[in-house]
Amino acid sequence: MQHSRRGERSRGFAPEQLSELLLSRAAVRIVCMRGTVHLLTGADAMVLRPLTQPVMRRDLSTNAEHAEALRGIDFDALAAEGRRLIEERPSSMAQLRPLLAQTWPDRTPAALAHGVRDLLPLVQVPPRGVWGKSGQPILTTLDHWLGQAIPADPAPDAMVLRYLAAYGPASVLDVQAWSGLTRLGEVLDRLRPQLEVFESESGTELFDLPDAPRPNVETTAPVRILAPFDSMLLAYADRSRFMTAEHKSLLFTVNGIIKPAVLVDGLTAGVCVLGNGKSGAVLDVELFGKITKRATTAVEREGLQLLRFAHPKAAAFDVRVHR
Image 1 (cartoon, one colour):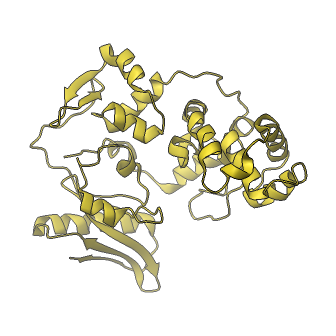
Image 2: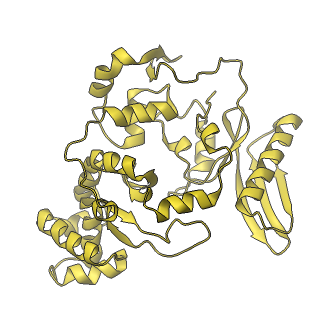
Image 3: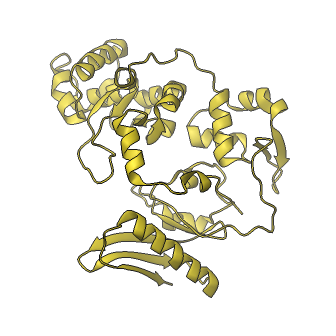
């Protein structure tokens, strides 16, 4: 049974608070762990982005779409020119492509822009990510946006401890799956004296912070509705603690989409679709199997809270649970 440690921190949260953090540059949207976009505090981004640079660098030679077109290019020169352009004027990938092609006319413009994405710590500047706003990703460098120098060689210890604070108890492979990095066993061995160490039912070592909350096995996890691509579903190598192989095939689509999941007693129990029309806001929940009447009531209650949060001005709210 998996218990999230994130609920208390988000109690009383309003979307406008996050918008203000983005506008004030206290929070940023940036490609980081596993080479995907994350929302981080500026302080965390300054540490996590350079730590995950090996993931980005690896993609330069393994990316199925662009690696061949980038083969043999001077990456230092590409990074320097990309930095010059994007700090001079924040740009989208589409805007950056023809500018880079002026220097490398024999290279594919899309591959050049992708190379800059991998080589530089690029943030998506507002209004991207601001609640109620829209717009394509416009990019500049993290250090230029925050006006701070990025640490040259940050230690991974703090990253591993931050991970355990949110997702422990967890194994070495779990931390590596979340971050995209390898050889983190060395880090956990170094941190071992200050951690609690457990053994899973399969015999795997699990690490956690000594003062982290760990409910006893009889504790019932509350119903939760996760966002699409929620880190809860991506933070572990071993997802069997909250998801069966059959459920994974229903949540993770072949084209890379990860659907919003419904958790009942800490286990994946269904998916949902959120919508808002003229008649009001609707949440359709499709369960994978039977759940108790009490759990159904809890799903409906949680769904109503989500609808009121996402669409506070809707004319009506309706949660529809389908088996």
